[in-house]
Image (tube, rainbow, N blue to C red; front, side, top):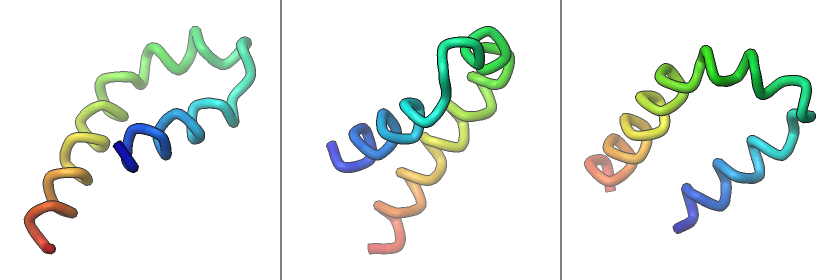
Length: 44
């Protein structure tokens, strides 16, 4: 859950006006989020 809370904190940095643009980048951020979690688990 540490990654999820960190991700939520990251999202709170942006204001509401950013969300429309953010949705365009969501797939990229999602892949980054999954891959970073995967590598963190693998390297431990």
